[in-house]
Image (cartoon, rainbow, N blue to C red):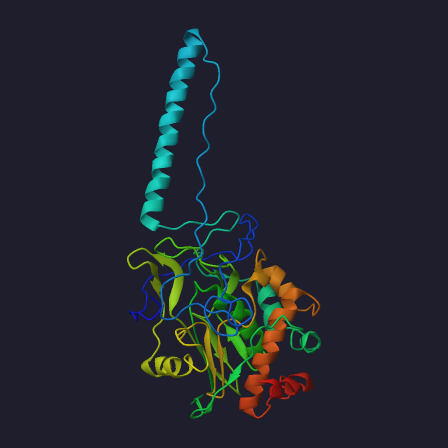
Length: 368
């Protein structure tokens, strides 16, 4: 699925209000997790990841569909009123049957099942409120320093690698390969935005949710996680080049059981994935997991650095507000991860700029 490179998806995605009050958010049970190593993972590494280029979804069983409520029996009226009542009942039955048939046809053609209590899946990218973007891209330094290493909430750190220095436009390059459907990418993007905003400026960020089920109807773990997409975003920094690739959308594709294509990695990008997203950085048989992040060929992050369960049932505004509260579970996970990413970036930029590479961040560099 993720390894099937296709032309860029021509469809135009419509808006999706990130925090619409009419869209309830619930908590769906997490999908199965790998036992190696510790931490909430479906694919390696020391942090969860979705298989790349393996199959389109995890083994998490899809939630049951909504059952059409059964009609209740009652006493039949008599006379003209009874006939009118029976005619009305017949009309209701026909109407109900038509709606039920429509639901069946939709389910058969889309093969998607939304787990109970979750919000509508495969939402289109939406415009985030400016206040939410501001909270995510300008987390106070005091809150980040207070969060430190996350106090145990961060289950995976950047791994040291060696290779020719990865640069673009004369600056160290941070390459990200992921997909909109992926819940582990969903979690990691929050920390990436927090960290990268210390070195530069984003534009075009859009809100989105991870998928609930793929084109084959197989459910995804941590469905409908509130997140962002880099598909149409741009980033500017005097110290770093950020190159994001969202290969697949969160829109189920029944034709291949996966998701529709968004962006296609270049051969050079795939070569980095093949080289570093493999043993010894991952165990045998677990190559190709996403998210995959290469920081200048000095550090690599494969999989999510913390459990997406931390974000379950939370809206974009709730998550964004929690980032400034270092004692919150959200801040410990996201800010802690962001500090590790910042430390890895600082190690590639010579600890520049000083505003990002604080004493707290520099003290974390030896832990990488």
